[in-house]
Image (cartoon, rainbow, N blue to C red; front, top):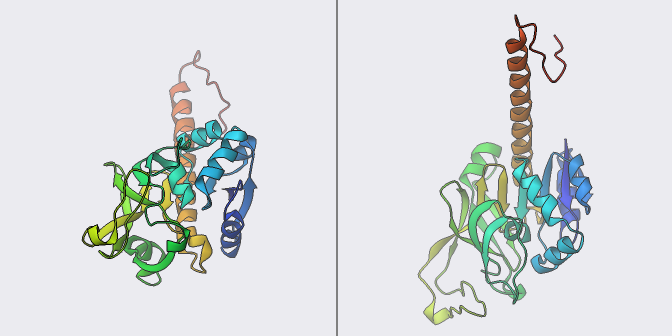
Length: 255
């Protein structure tokens, strides 16, 4: 099993190191043709606008969108979450190109600027049920985005309760000051939709590899499902050819 890590900018080395601790090979992806060699892909955290400009420069967006459409697992962390979202707000003037595929709206800098970065324990019941360990996960939020809304096919995996005395988000069009802040509310910070996983925080910057392990299991399940589908198709083709001399399958059948 080989996992690609988009290596244009950001914490791709940290993701590769986390995969190595699990005994999984991670390779740096910088060209479209390299995507053909991996079974899944991680889009790391970093500066999303810079990453988007580099991806556009290397003409990577068409290949990334095609990779998502194939059904192979893709995990986006922080900036990677922004990349995978179908809709984004709070972007810099002119916006940025998105890969899309994840039916959600994300706010690019929901938690504020770089100096407002923080760490917090977040409740992760699904992760704990799948991977064991503590019921919370230490989330590292660096100028982090958040998911504002999700479509019906999106599973919410984790929330973060935003205290009422914190600035929730800011942009050129929306300003929420401390005195006008909303009451405490649960903000979505981790989601999953079919083959797509996304977290607003940086699991690659912690020693806890449960999110990476969870993604590896997603990859394995997808690969097994694809193999079963191919096997069923081959059997079906073979069965329809029995007793019919004129019926010749387009692919060789080995029995």
